[in-house]
Image (cartoon, rainbow, N blue to C red):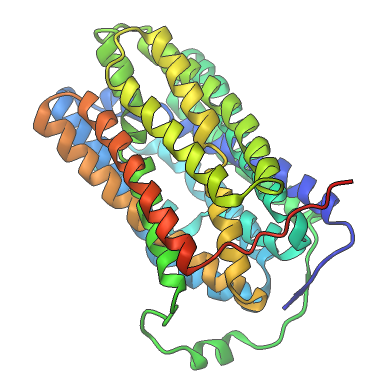
Length: 407
């Protein structure tokens, strides 16, 4: 059980900074993984698509399995402890990438990392539990801006580090950043958590099967579909850049620039959509953002100039970047507060199922057609299909979003 703290703004600032640093850590290493696979001897485009898809699937698979478990533990020991655990777990594992010399072992490493980390869902659950209802959309939007801001910083930092010092030092630096992020939450993070049961009691009370969510199942299906649509093309952005630039050595730098500008757009998107959702009809904001993003994803599939791709991708992220926090706020309003950890853990699992499916199907499409362009086109179509699903779900599970009173 958790009581709302009067200093929720201070806690939001601490978690915001922690997530900024965490995402900078992960993105400084992971943005350039297709290039790292090349360095490890993966040469053919089809083989590279295979490993890129496997890399995404591996982490999401173990994350999917462990997210509900960590969510249950969070309801017993508190959400702050789970955020600390996720950061320190990543700090321990990330530097190990520097000593791995096989692309297959990279996949195995990703399996372990997916099981131990999960800073985003842990941070979102902590913020939900410590923020007043009328400020939750904004707070989750702010966390989304931290994620994109950290990704932007990591992509610019990682691109420079990789070119100057190589991948190994970049992986080591990533581990240091995750340690710093964990220490921030350990020292300054706060949660007024009141423990009401032991872990043994909680485990004994569990029926080891998929929970009977009732109407919440409709939201879980939405989380799966959102994850599938987003991850369908995400792992293949560096490959699209390489294809447009005909495998030029400058493709790595341009991948960093594109990802950096997208992250800047994501910062604005998280704050903007969180602000709008607290003042305008929730579903209209959600549907408009998804439709704009769908059209821009289709446009990217036809791009033949890297500068045009930068603009198109950035505008797409500006529209879609803050959508996931809106889904989280929707779920929070429809579930009991004392069980938010468990529900958010299952929601993270649902997203991971979508991520796994999206990356796997995207890899199949890329290999089938021999180009990643059809992957981006397909992603746009998937986003368009989300619109009727959202409208139908809203009729069954009406969003309970507390709007901020206008002065």
